[in-house]
Length: 89
Image (cartoon, rainbow, N blue to C red; front, side):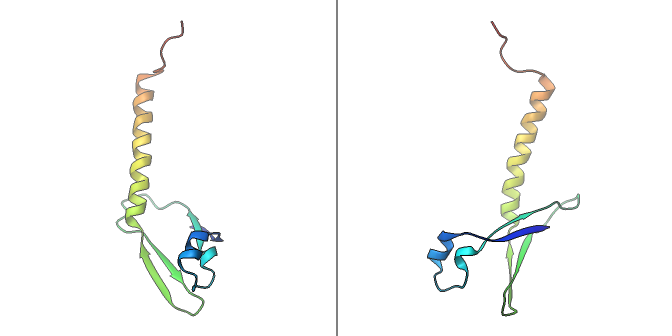
């Protein structure tokens, strides 16, 4: 996966003023997973001091997938019925 990090997060900077670079803690991860069922999706953060933390984000991915699946299903229905626009006068 590709990760773009160091993005501005003023809200985090205000909430955690004692943390170094908290105001630049934003990130965007993009990529694809292999086909199949994903049971767990986690982000591992590695700190400059050598420490690390793992954050389970499975539920966030599930909510995005549900929304996309719903849009895809609506698209299938519309295509199955053809042009659903009202006829022009």
